[in-house]
Image 1: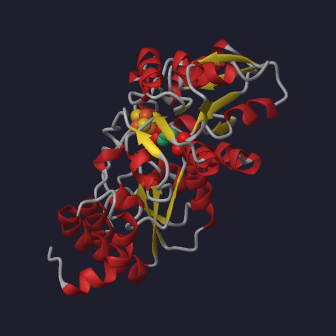
Image 2: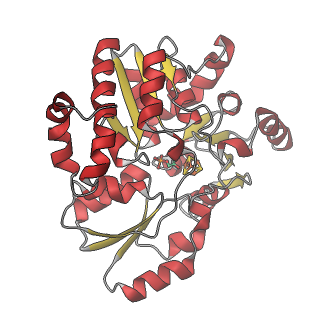
Image 3: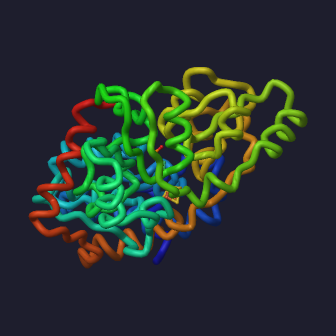
Length: 329
Ligand code: 13P
Ligand code: SF4
């Protein structure tokens, strides 16, 4: 695609914002896609919902909303667009479909999965419920529709503790993230029955790395996602969802910060926080990185990658997501 004068004129205001994080030579490749995608969005009354882990050219270039998984789920229920393109992973697109069943929801790469979501099936949840009769099931949104259909209430990392406490019970089944379960258990008196799922990105961090970064960078603030192992969270100054981490940086404006999470986060928020120095040992999510501008353009143009869930499944699986949305952050 050509970096024409028309493309340059239309995309210059975006590039001005992000010129510090994307080199000019790279921009000339992204800009034609950004221009075409933004035109198509208008023509088709489409919206792009992007997770905070998307690359800067998607996050700043084409996303109508860039947010954490809780905000994306809520946004999907409110949008007036006819088409929702999920720049994120499969469970996020499914959640959008549950929240907006009448809309066309597209995912630019159907192989964009999640190690947490693939760690558990509906059958596993039914067995857990048999083993612990009467104990409510709280599922992370990082699960399939099939698992959500067996769930009492969903949560994200932004509201997991609030959701668990809201049930007013002594015990809950909390799935599938074992580390998030441990984090929630450390913040509540409710007994947590966990599952063995792990986020392949956050499990790679370790406490030694954190100590070594602190030693080399006196005064640094270290903020971690609650999908990290417990020793990493303990060694950090703050734990929160991706949007919680962004808010921490925006509000506190630390001189130096390390975000213990997916790599794109620091790049994306460097733009609005020019005085913060980001130390970047980070890990890439291979699933999130499957989403690219050419794939977004392709799926929007041909309206392929549609999320289809049968009506009965939608009816069952949207209940726990709606309950979560009603409880909020
Ligand atoms: P949040 O944006 O809800 O913190 O989720 C993190 C995540 O792992 C999404 O894949
Ligand atoms: Fe799943 Fe972890 Fe990737 Fe998020 S970062 S999509 S939890 S594998």
